[in-house]
Amino acid sequence: MAKTDKRRTTTGRKRLTGDIARAVRAALEKKAQDVVVLDLRHTPAFTDFFLLCSGQNARQVHAIADAVEEALKTAKVRPAHIEGYDRAEWVLMDYFTFIVHIFTPQTRAFYSLERLWGDAERIEVSDDPKNDAGGTARP
Image (cartoon, rainbow, N blue to C red; front, side, top):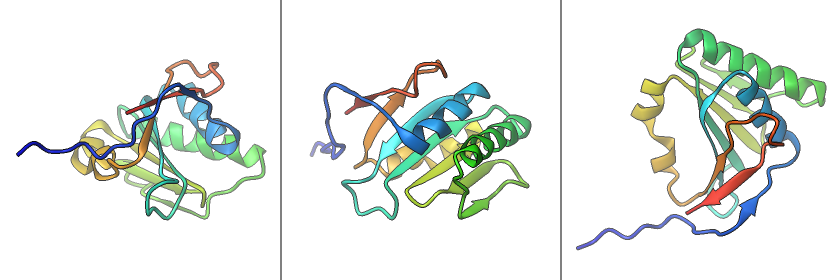
């Protein structure tokens, strides 16, 4: 019996705006890799978006987290909670309407949030931080 793919399918280009766009740009400016935004608004999730990205080592994970926090602080937005900063294998930054997840590649593969939240619309993000954090929705 074949498995059915439950992911939402979308067409066209989707623009990220506001605080989530600021967070994406800040992560990209610190060379975050595999940046993906999951749109959770049509799922039974507790937030609207997940921003997922990877840093190659603990130092880069810290740099990405610091940049995201600073970029949002200038917009007068502060996280409700930050977890994992000391170990820097998986830093979680809770901004209520979106959550930033910054992983090392090994930790990201192990927890596989993209698979866990497979019902969410996946928005691929350009590697260019000057691209206004635009994304392309992918099925």
